[in-house]
Image (tube, rainbow, N blue to C red; front, side, top):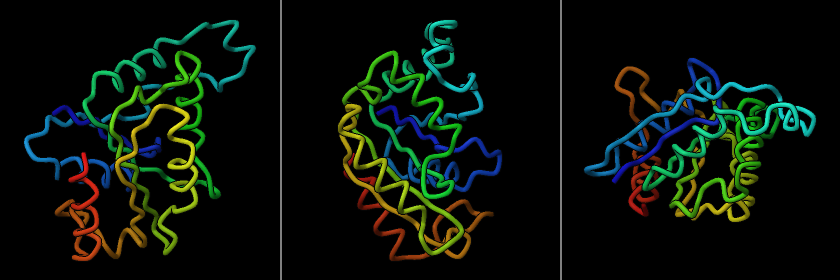
Length: 173
């Protein structure tokens, strides 16, 4: 199984990228590819830019990557209760290629933050809208207080209860 893992963040030190990568490592016998949103940089989406540029190559590559995967694990960073501008822009451009951005793929949606909310607002928005974009959401999980529950050196969850929940969600792929 080819699993595509990504963080809905452009931060070079993204805790959501660490979480998505770790979650993907829990899928047995999977070939994992981790995407970096910085590899899909484009101008801010607008109809005027779309008329000028058409469908930018980075959006086409992103769409193709999603299509080549057997499953997708995405972890959402939350900026002011919503998506990061970087993710929203890539998503907006890609949705103009095909509204079925996720192409019917099984998807696990995660989110984390340093605080106790665990980016649950953006996770709720993402899981709520996912069916409109052809995501077969198999499960979702918010990890609160990331630095209290994740060992940065070992790259894994340290909270046994959260580890069990994550393993259960990932097993749904």
